[in-house]
Length: 193
Image (cartoon, rainbow, N blue to C red; front, side):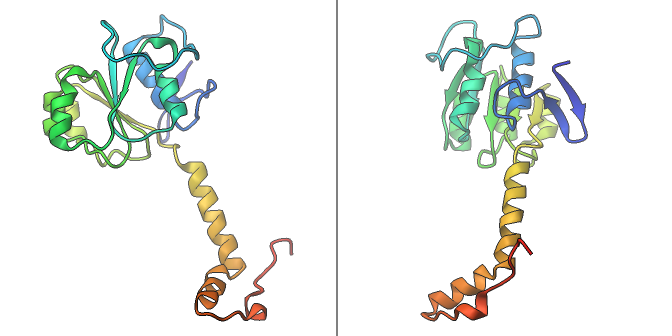
């Protein structure tokens, strides 16, 4: 099986792409292409407006690697337009079959109503609090997210905070900013011991 339902939502197999986006990319692929065509990881971003190809609007910044995965094989027409207001999105969305957002863009009722071709809202992140899921469901639009998308970053951040506290880095920084330096006071605890 290519994907399955896990405790946090749909999980895709990491088939060479960014594991944080692989589930989202796989879902978009299944919805628009179907299992009849194999996944391919070649090609590049295609020009805007190819006939018969589903158009995907990426409304918030995602990595180039994520864009490449969406556009791989040329089966989807990926257009990036970040920083759009709600009114601008209402004007843009009618020509798109899917929209990919992160945290900045809010997918509201007016956007969903204007999206006459809209079939998928993909949230590249943990929650879907910036998507009106109820309104999307009423319109038959699939809402998906990438629940494990920031797990590694969160763990790294937690570990760096633990090391910072163990080595008294915040206190040493404040002391240095005040124009002092009492090195003995900020020895902290070595991780090795």
